[in-house]
Image 1 (cartoon, rainbow, N blue to C red):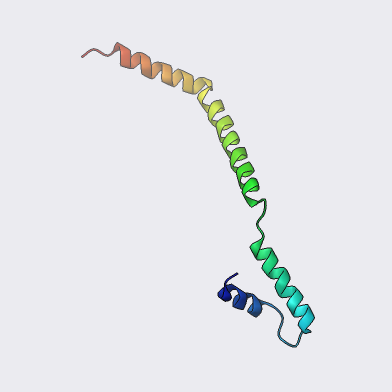
Image 2: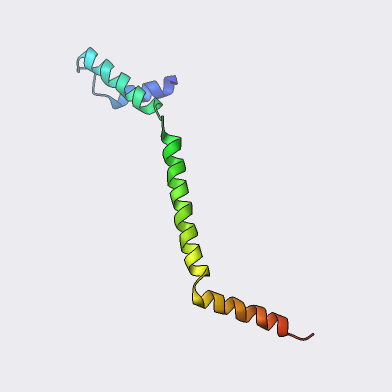
Length: 84
C-alpha cells in the first residue's frame, strides 16, 4: 500500500486519543478491506453475462415481432421491385 493511501487512512480513523491498540486494529482492518477485492472479477463477469442475455432476449423479441418482420419484408420487396 502506498504511503499516500496509508496517510489518507490515518486521517479517516478516530483521533489519536483513541487507544493505540484500537487505532492500530482499525487501520489494519481498513487496509485489508481496501486491498482485498478477491472475487470481484467473477461478480463483474456474472453481471455482464446477465445483462448481455437480457439484451439478447429483448432484441430477439423485437426482431421476431410481427411489425418488424412485416416492415423488413416490405422493404425487401420494394427494393427488389424497383426498376432502374
